[in-house]
Length: 127
Picture 1 (cartoon, rainbow, N blue to C red):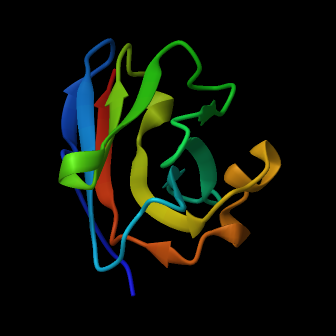
Picture 2: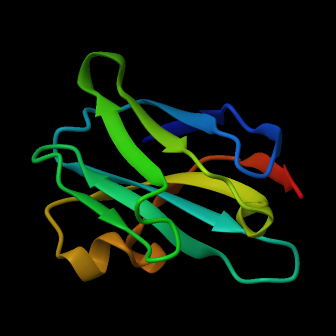
């Protein structure tokens, strides 16, 4: 079993930054991929970014490339999402998720392949 706990959400003005954290526990993550997804009001949940726990390869949605950075701390079993140059359209509930690896780049961005989810953390960007 895997437990994921997100933190770091909040209210920020457009152009500001936030760093989300996802603390993972329950099983070793050496063979897992960790991803961030988000769901805005009235919209479907969408892929944001993902990272391979073993290789460190990263994957991003086009809408966040160059602004968001995903990283991991193996010792702390924690994945981070550094979000810079935030826009009002980034407002959403952000979810951390884990999936067994290895995986193709397509699989890393597909939420149907993730079996474990956190409870989500709200990010609100004001204009």
